[in-house]
Length: 105
Image (cartoon, rainbow, N blue to C red; front, side, top):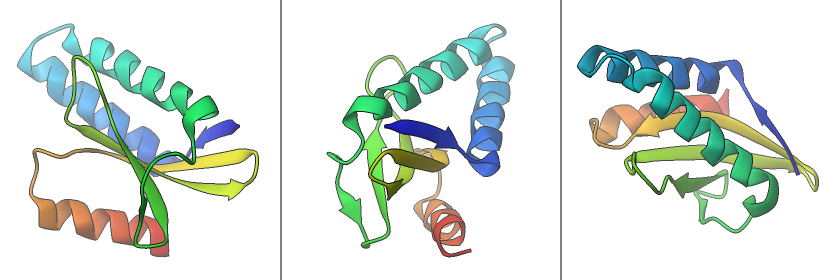
């Protein structure tokens, strides 16, 4: 499948990279590369993840940065749209509101 990352999800990744780089200089590019690798795996794995609320699917990252969840939907049989990449150590209410906004607008 072809994976497309929308602008909001790209901004999520950039925000995460900036945050990690502030915590430890040089770590930002590492987490960004990790997340891009997660997204690339959707080319072959999209569709096997749990369907949430009948709207989107979510996959939890595995590896060095295990707290990220990628939210995506399958638009056509060969296209995946990633709408959000969130750190699930944050407030669940904030995350839920952001995800709902991304998939309903």
